[in-house]
Image (cartoon, rainbow, N blue to C red; front, top):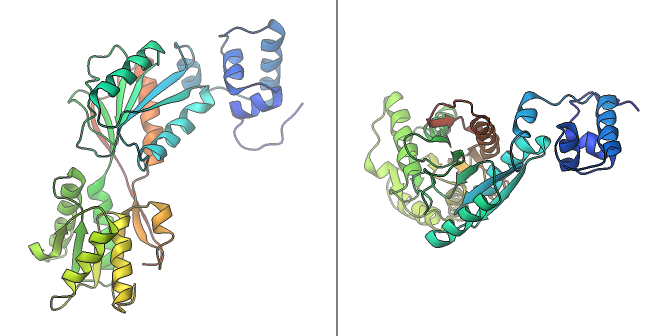
Amino acid sequence: MSSTNVGRITIHDVAAAASVSIATASKALNDTGRMSVETRARIRRVAQELGFRPNALARSLLSKRSFTVGLLTNDTYGRFTLPVMAGISEGLIDHGVSVFLCAIEDNPDLAKLHVDAMLDKQVDGIIATGRRIDKPLPVDLSHLPIPIVYALMTGPADAVALVPDDRQGARDAVNHLFDKGRRRLVHVTGPASFKVVEERTHAFRDALATAGMTPSEAQILTGAWSEQWGREAVEKLWSQENPPDGIFCGNDQIARGVIDALREKDVGVPNDVSVVGFDNWEIVAEQTRPPLTTVDMNLKELGRQAGRALVRLVNGEIVEPGVSKLPCTLVIRGS
């Protein structure tokens, strides 16, 4: 048997060629689990013939207990959790590790129930995530006997946490508007109580100051995370003299509402006004007309990095505590 695949051979390939599950292939290659001597030898032979080379991360993680990682979230809608989970899964599935998802809403009793269930299942660690960076889950994870990593959420001061760099993403959005020749800029965003609103507003003000402008309070409008608020903001802005020629929105839903309201006023996007969103929620951004230029928080990569950080902690390695900010990416479309 030989392989013509020029890419890296993964455990998926080994499992498929040996007609076994990924978990069985992982256990055979790492000398764990129960199976016949013949099956273990056959899987190893297939792996050798394919040229499969398990990396040190896989070997170290698979020497642990249950090959499962718990993902705890209060994001029941899944808007943020699902891409984070996809990244975690992609980063760990080659190692035969599965992700055990528990949605806890904002219910402390339900949260404790799920944490206890995770401990009963002997998960190797837990990744905590949720709807907002500045709102902790309704359960204390700091004293658990297993490693914890926070993704898209900050934890205790001595915890390992990964979040998007909202200020960098917002600066890129504003600078893109400047690059398009826009000078009368407005930031239409969500509730002022959100940490991400504070971060993105700070970056908006800073970018304008760097360009020699002084943003007035009228240039920053806070409201709900909704298309309706985007529409209302346009009504407010176009009731004033000298409306903006560039609008940076706090999320894609607001941006879609802004663009729809501008179309109804026969204001051209992007000819008359350029609009940039935040989140890169593709189901919204790609269906907006014109398709929305927006900031991607790279949640899948954030999940992948969170998984890797948890692996290092599981292996007893030292991971620097604190909040790590991962870069965002400006996705340029038609708005």
